[in-house]
Image 1 (tube, rainbow, N blue to C red):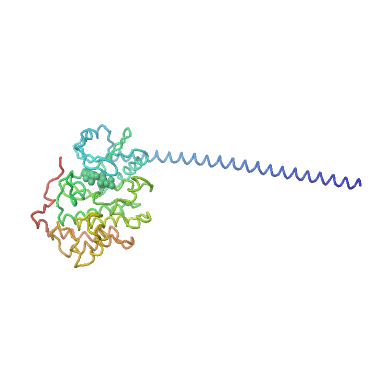
Image 2: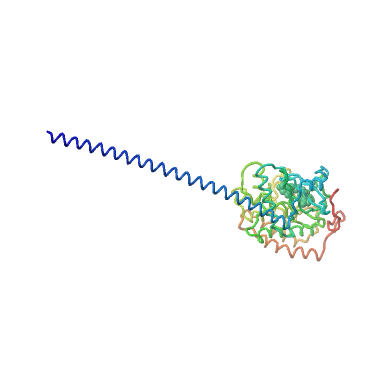
Length: 396
Ligand SMILES: Nc1ncnc2c1ncn2[C@@H]1O[C@H](COP(=O)(O)OP(=O)(O)OP(=O)(O)O)[C@@H](O)[C@H]1O
Ligand SMILES: [Mg+2]
């Protein structure tokens, strides 16, 4: 009996000991896990702090770059300087209004004329766009791109100072409006071809001569500016083009470009390549050929969307003449029209892969423009003003 009791007591002690040991083991495990979590949290907090510090440093170094660039070429203006250049930002000097804000005509202290864009988008997003524009434009130089002369970033005022283009945007001549700041001129065939070539050279520079390539994203007739001799330069290739895609408000319009110019695959999937710009270029080529805006729902059914209406006619030798701008009054030869129409048709192909590179477009246009210049078919109609003969037509 005693043996039995003793055995039971020992067994009880053993069970209690095992329970105690197991509890201690669980407790130890719990403590170890809690410690592990604590350490992990600490490490991740340290990493986050490091990341924030790195980002801060990058921002600082970007800004430092900005200063270096500014010293190399861009002029940093004070708000006061630009205030006096534009006559106190007077209404009479407003020459346009776009997504960035009002555009003023101004005269700089060295006597140069300039177009000054006053950013009206406050906040971080606007600042980011401004920074991208300055950093990008200060690195890109081509006779076919609008030059940034300088900028001002003073007391929350952000302004961009560009070279002045006396004949404003291409759209102002293709579709004149009564309150235009420039005197609209009927663009003849030769000038339209040379504008097409120069704009192609601008895009080709962005796509082929810059690494990584810059995608314009908002190529349209109002972003082709014309100087006093109607030479074309591509503008607004810096605003929001390298920025991250963000949804909402004005930015989504920028990201999606402008109605009528946006390549279908970009509109549908947001997938952006240089071929999206080629599509937009094709739309501008169609505007030059037809004198029609990309979207005009006041037109008869089937004619409202320029690409849908024109595409089936572009490759039909008999019908292509029907799409031509009546204002051109037959200054072109059929051979030239067929060639330009074929280029336009390829550029606006719904399938991005079928569209040509801008380098190909440029090469195809070169001989046409040369031919035009040597044979000079301008001025066949007395009502047609040759823009090359007209003086800088900006109204003062
Ligand atoms: N460098 C310039 N020289 C002369 N006129 C200019 C210049 N830049 C802009 N403009 C005028 O200001 C107008 C508005 O230009 P802005 O680029 O702000 O807007 P947008 O091209 O109409 O639209 P977005 O903001 O989408 O580019 C142009 O159509 C043009 O008439
Ligand atoms: Mg513009």
